[in-house]
Every structure is written in C-alpha cells, then in structure tokens.
Image (cartoon, rainbow, N blue to C red; front, side):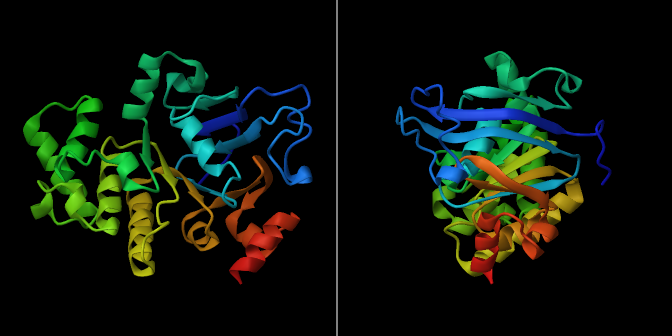
Length: 282
C-alpha cells in the first residue's frame, strides 16, 4: 500500500458534531483534558470535534475508544446518517475528490451512499429490512445502485450469500428466521453488493457469541483481501482492531488523542488513555 499526498481515497478535515447550542468556549472547555464532552456553560454535547485524517486505497483504519468517545458518530456523519456541525470531507471517486461531499445536494448524497459507500451496523436491524428476504435485501441495494435486471440481481445475490457463507437455499427466507451471526453476514452481503470503494463497520461483532465473532472477523478479513475494499472499523474491542486494521485512531471524549500504525499503538502506546486501553487488554 503506497501512501502519499496524492493517492488518498478519503480525506476528512475538522469534522465536528455538537448536540445543543454551543457557546464560544464549548470546544475549549471539553475534551480529554476535562474528562468530559459536555460543555459546562451551555450543556451542549460535543460528540466529536476537530477530526482530521486521510484514508488510502486498500487500507483498513481502526477507530477505537470507550462508549461515548465519538467513534460511531464519526462514521455516521460520513455515511449521512447524521448532519455535521462543521467540517469537510472528500472522496476520490466522487468528482475526483475536488468537492466536499458533506455539503452536496441530497440527490448527490444518495448517489454517493448507493454507489460508493457501504455500512455494516452493530445491530442488523439498522442495516436490513426485516420485511424483505435475505435476497430481497441485497436486491434493494443493487436496485439503488442502478442494477435492474432480475436475473443478474438473483445471480449476484446468490454469489454474495455464498461468499459470506449464508446458505443460498435460504435466499428467500426472512432475516428474522436467522441467527444473529447469519443476520450480520447477510448485512455484510448487502453492504458490499454495490462494490463500494469504502466500507464502514460499526461494532459489527458486539453482542455475538465469541465463536461467531471469530467467523465474522475472518469473513471481513477475507473479503478485504479478495476485494481490496478500504474500510473504517469502529470498535471498543482492541482485539478486533488488532486483527483487522493497518492504522488506528484512538478517541476519547470526542477527540482523537493518538493515531498511528496499529502494531505501534498496541505495542508502545504514547497517550495515557491509549496505555489504559492496551493494559486492559493484557
């Protein structure tokens, strides 16, 4: 993987999300130094602030931190599930990376979401329509990405279910009849149906049995290697981050407190919070 100033896939600058009305000192009175993301003056909540990073083609970036650190907010802002307070982001496959995609029209956001991005949520109910069959969920994503040929849709759905180890015979079954691990694999099939250059994974193994977690993680790693998709993996679990990611951002109270190669952060963390996270894993 070659990293230089020209070959980035995603560039994020000063991304910030604040709930409530911020005051003039909201950002300067919140964050890791204060052990709080709640503004003492206004009560507004700084979900994340001043987030800056680049992601490169084929790279897997981890975002780790405790509950409430802002890591899930970050990917939901980039996937248009939430509206930013401020900040910019550019995606190379969209307008050659020259237009801030967080401020385009809703029509263009739909195009980006349907053609260039994929998302796998912690809860499969957030990513799947439980009124549709497993094949129907994949078909929905393909139709939104402008594939309308029924035969090709069923062929692609079969291929994706097979790739994610969901029995193709169950293509016409509803997700509600599946185990949690199988629901998650169907959700992954749906998320990659449009061959997105960028896939977000938000706490995808939380709530799964340990043996099922291992299978889902193996699947994600195999898909990344086979398809070369860039990924942003959000987790509070450092063992997930260690298994999947090349580089890691550590977040606390809405801010990035450390970033670097995953091996480097796990072996020699510099920030006291990163040290605490790593020592809790040992």
